[in-house]
Image 1 (cartoon, each protein chain N blue to C red):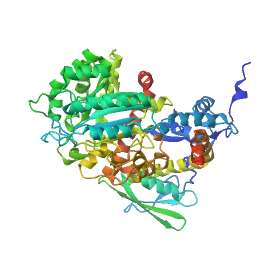
Image 2: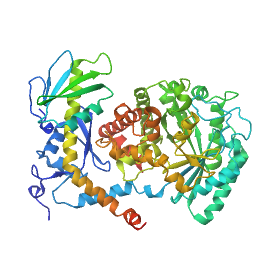
Image 3: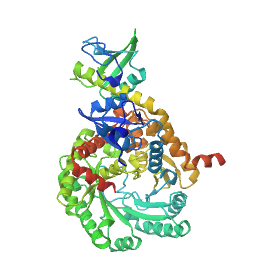
Image 4: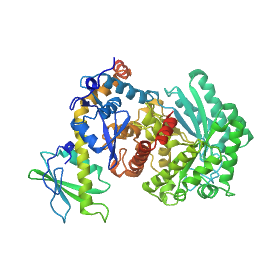
Length: 481
Length: 123
């Protein structure tokens, strides 16, 4: 039986608000979000009418009710559904820590402008991890309750200590026979030292390669310097070798935005497309280490990076319209948070923050850091995020230390000023390392925070585009899958 | 006047409970009967990148003096920006108060079934 419209209509004051937050996108457009980030676009007048209870627009009320932004008094189901979705979004929390970064050496034959950690002229072995340190780090990694373990080899250039990469992989596989975890490996390499032996090993162990590609040859080689000035040529040749030998999906690349990158977003993306890379991560430079000393290419502000990001995103959308599949990785992470109840677990966009509980870093000397950025800060003399050492610290010492718990609890967005009422809180993250590095405390003053300004800018851009462009909304849905 | 703000109009020039008092000093007054101090303080925090604000109690008003961080910002721009932020914060405070019991219910439902509470109790 079909109900008459009058039988289902909500009269004025005939509903109650569910927890909602709003953000003004434009003079005539506001986005409302519920506790888990589901969103509806309304006008400012509609927002006022809904909050004061005078709205009688049944189509709007139906949309708001469907998005768990309002409910009929006495209903129980909306709260239960919101609770299920909230729990689903946070289901990774009990399964800490999935990512374990092994810094197998600090040595590197590159001297990148923005690098904080490499030691080009180091005496061999002085900055290499030993088997004993690696063994102790593995024992800690396998204490993690996470059913998924990813071991990422970093440096410096990890292939300069390739024998240890082999040893750790074999040892982890041996230990995993007892633990039965979903175990994976990643080598973060500039590819200059890629050879047949490394390719054979990666093929055998199903290892993923993550590399750096800043864009066209002149831009990349200007940022990433090495003897012979051929970093780009080495990276491109390496990417092609991995694609041919291991498969296109086994190599991904990251770019870092320097001042020289601004104005060249389209060229950068073209470079990726020409190489058959299907994802670009338009990343701003990290506010750590050498990048802050004026010679790292960080002489630009958030607004200039946002302009760069917007141009790059438009270029990527255009490629997709032309039938060239390409993903902007940051937008795809946010798409998951905006359009699904799955949290992708990206360390920078989680609350509680991802430090320690999302990733642990084992430095070459056995020191343990809560994040890679925490390790970079330590290289600059600030050891705030050093949690202990594999030589002497137990798993409980590390995970229950005030050095980890204080930044986690102090920065959580559900209690941080401005974040509590921010419509974008379900999409955003805490990032206590960034705020400690730039503002001197774990929470940071959000109105002055470059992290907040950058992410608010990205969320606003993505929402406006989804509101105005059905193709982009569909693309975001595909990226969210 | 925005009914959502819940603020009476106290001057023809400055809606939403705010009245421009001193052109030389960029000051706004908000009636204490209609504007929560909490909403004002949240507003001050939110606009800290653009201006700093001094709040004083003056009779029945909160007197807010606005200090721009950047040169070239006009008094009118400052006032409009701060008034708009106060209106939004009033709305946010109102929504938060109205929905707090349901928010607590959702969180209670979400985390009462994780097993964490039992594990802690039995430890």
